[in-house]
Length: 226
Image 1 (cartoon, rainbow, N blue to C red):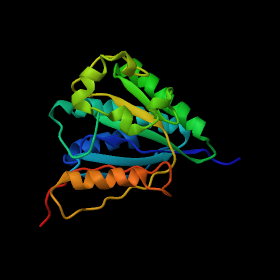
Image 2 (tube, helix red, strand yellow):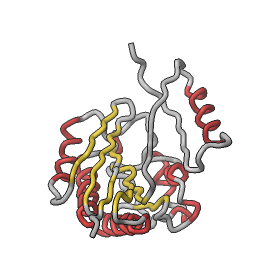
Image 3 (cartoon, helix red, strand yellow):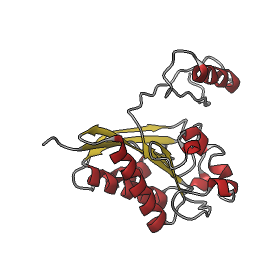
């Protein structure tokens, strides 16, 4: 019988304070059966992408502990960064690796969302293959308005969270979780201070004939490098 392996790639809204990041990754590694593969902080984005793998139940537990810890040690009311975000744990996708299906991972996202909503009392949105509504499949659509617009978004019945209360938590924001395929991400630096140039390129990439339907592009501002 083949082993069952799931990858989880939570993105946390902290990329500058190594001590806070370590508190979160320690909570992940404390779960038996988890292998931490990568921790990638970014100062400009003020965001850290963490990658870990394990069996489905262990991954689900580690994801919850990570979300819980991030809600405790991070404060979205003081956060700023170049990358779009909506919460302390901004997005937490599950990816099938071996012996599991995409629907298995979607179920893990729903389990995580229900638990976060119930135990942490945070609003949770489902996206991609875990989405309950077709208009919520796209991450950029769900995250539109970001943290700064979340309080108003939660007042709109059309944007009631999939789990948890429709109540603004100024410290932790909201969680977005779902299931998706593997993602290859890379950055291109432009010799320009005008974000509009990057936005135009991102929009063109999204409409380019021949590109995969799942291709995504976004624009952000980075600090100048000497």
